[in-house]
Length: 161
Image (cartoon, rainbow, N blue to C red):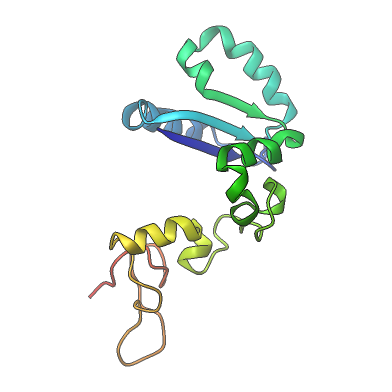
């Protein structure tokens, strides 16, 4: 089963999307219900604790067991426990209790490793979902080619013709 960690730092009314929440709940229920073992909401705004407390009676007991709100002070300990102490230093950034470089903000990554993380990037390369590093280049130029409709040369797919 999967463990889903969502960092909610900076979430507020100005950037909150009810449509996104509805889509996330719908997709999770339809496609991943039995695959998700736990959902950790890291750094939730303090107001979410009040909302969560009010919604508890409406939520299914299985959902309550899976959903965990993790206060900012508990994030490093929780993440180290999830990843495992032996690997935490190398895999987690300082804000999550390790010594690795901080994760880039969404949309800021340029390489596949920066976009999805080195562990997932290596898995994708090994199974052939993404080309090996440096393979996503045209033959006559050093300029990147589009690998998928949404991004420049990121390794998220095979080069388009």
